[in-house]
Length: 112
Length: 114
Image (tube, rainbow over the protein chains, first blue to last red):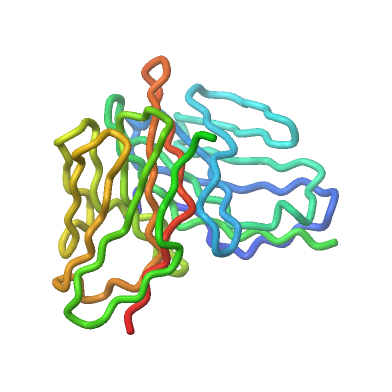
């Protein structure tokens, strides 16, 4: 069983709509959760981090965490063509464990 | 101008050759990491270092070696023992704030085998 799972996509969303990206993880003691955006040929860029259950908003991005169900999601409102990228979910699998485990990423395409 | 730099951007390796990838950071971060990314796959941890002169193997350390002689530098050597080295190599460093650690990535080095 994969430790961090994401739907590989591609996920196609019309411009201006809400894009919803999901991630599940296997280890219940996971403490920290991150979303990175990776453009083709480029390195990952941190866009959101979340540590507590509930929602965290930053501009057009909202991260949602549900530890009981072991999933974390990323919502992108008013999607723009520049949001087209692969989104990587990363999880810190234990308090004090500095290693991040990454999912394989979801490729998002925003259709103009 | 603070950040993480990696060089070269592209690197070509001949059969049986060892090559070294450079990673430098001026962010005063204590921890540094090396990941490998293959097409369509997530990042896999090769080595990491939390302090100078100390490092640990990650999930796929075989065929790789590292050193951490300075806080700012964490070079990765891809040895001839690594039989499938073609990949995108990413260096990261991290800062810990209020017991939470966040990793930031350099621009990456793409390694190709001739």
